[in-house]
Amino acid sequence: MLSYRAFMNKIKQGSFAPVYLFYGEEKYLQEELINQVAASFLVQDCEFGQEKLAGNAFSLEEVLARLGESGLFSERRLLIVDNPPYLVPPGKREEKNQPEEKDPQDSRVKSDSDLLENYLKQACPGNPDSILIFLASKVDRRKRLFKLIEKNGAVVECSPLKGEALSAWIRNKVSKLGKNIERPALERLLAAGEQNLHYLSNELEKYSTYLGEDHNIITVKIVEDLFSGDIQGDVFKLSDSMAEGNMVGAHDLLDLLLRRREKPLLIFFMLVRHYRLLLQAHCLMEDGLPQNEFVSSLEVHPFVARKLREQAASYSRYVLEEVLLALQKADQQIKTGRIEPSQALKLIINRIEYIQSTFHSSV
Image (cartoon, rainbow, N blue to C red; front, side, top):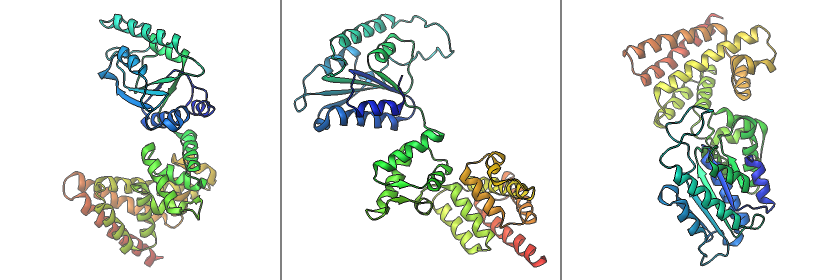
């Protein structure tokens, strides 16, 4: 089995096999793999040489017959079969390390294996005229079909990307767009918690378009100004406004979130979590904890840890404790139905303003 990146490199070098299997939950990676195979294998015939079939609508015998048909506008053929039933695991067999049970379709499975094996014997391994690609969310790796594909072609698992793998994907995507992204900007994007590749791709293309031809660097400011749907970032801005005493700005931002149809209860609980982290960060600073240990202590993304440390420095411990008590009281009122979440949010901003003004007047 090949990794996503290893397979991409192999295809870019012009090394092709007659059959591939891309499986896993990350559909965007599957699409990228298909696009790369199409661009490298079909070249100028990319538009006419490929076809996609629904796996449950065609038997493997029909698929192979379709693959053998000559194209009207392309000498080479790329046939994609989406979710073929003959590769997925049986629904009832969930436990690991169990022997494969026989079922009524066993004769069909054996026939499919023989069909694919005969096709592969006739195909040219190094320079095929046609390529067959199977797509699936889950596969049974014990099936003979799977092993035939792995032996004679390539199997690539397309799992959701995380950590450094996701960072590498973002940098590669930005590079393809002809831009660069600063490490802090990349961290800011990851800290928002949105890891859907379709969504991230659209965001990066938006930043690239915004930069135009005269600028090449995606900065933190660009991400913060243009990123859509970042409720965690908006809660930071809300807290910043309140720490600065800018209650008009805080109310305006809250109104914007509500107009954007963010759920009031979600905003409220994000605010509760945020002030808990701020108090925790403030206590760590009082204890003299080094900055490089904040990430592990707070158990948040490095970018978020830095922002929490900076923001906690602008609050007093008294204010943070009083704000949390006010939030706790509002939480009880929401849960008992005495107040609506959207009304609680507006009242809590006023309460925070009162707490801060009372503290500053007493200092």
